[in-house]
Length: 175
Image (cartoon, rainbow, N blue to C red; front, side, top):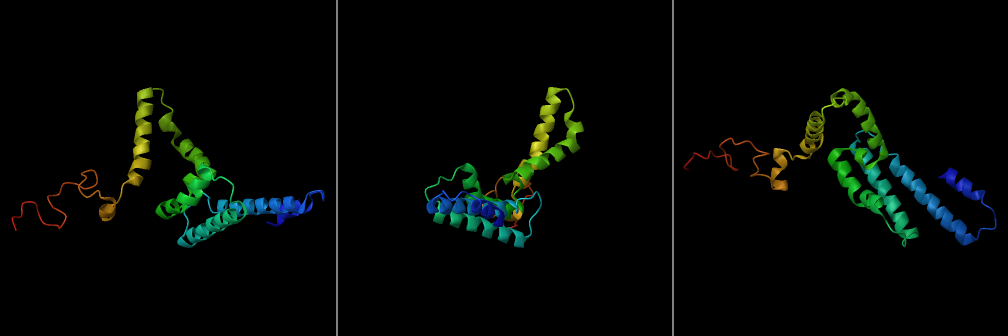
């Protein structure tokens, strides 16, 4: 914060006290946003880091509520304030919420480039669909122990037919 506030100290004295106060509120918000951004590296966060991220997001939100109540929160702000923590707790990072995550995809692409250099469009589409299913769809599938919570117990995609019902009794059991 000292850097942005030092810049404000260099502003011409012609600015009114109200303008200076508003400028400080804005730079404080930017500094708080920078603190949040510092937690968005493309890496897995420890539980303590996730708690720190939540505290930083809360500080930014409170500052904006107090000093910028008339400002509109757009889509990125909504994603940050309403969905980022849920995502961080579920996946252990915020890489898809930040430009670092997007930039890190370049490295993934370069590593897998040989798969995508083929000229046959049908094979390219097949590879992209396969990669999507492996990276996205599989990651989103609930684990069997989570099935009740997600109400997927009867879906054969999540459970193989093993002849047992929910209580562990065999379907062939008459008792």
